[in-house]
Length: 112
Image 1 (cartoon, rainbow, N blue to C red):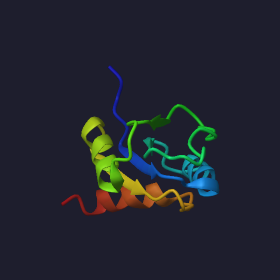
Image 2: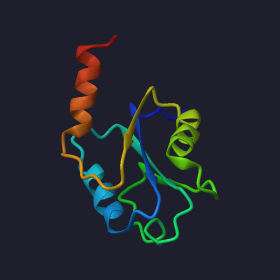
Image 3: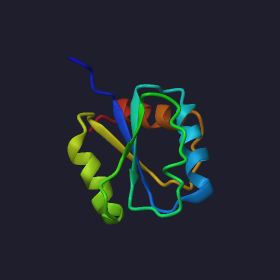
């Protein structure tokens, strides 16, 4: 039986262009490595998701085949994952290397 990651990061991509790859690359450099990342292709037409180079097997692309909207795309993944925590990340961001570590430390510090 495979252990679920501590946290799932969901990135909803809709015509994210040049921002998507740097976002994914920054996420791959996290000091906290026990995560999975799901990039939801919300029916993009710009080719950014197709051109995406996934850094490792923690990353995967979900293609619902239609634009579900931001909430719908996040909910689709949230309902399907087994990790106890979920973080939402916009594709036009570049997170600091300790972003997930800080989030998970907050969880440990304030469990309620």
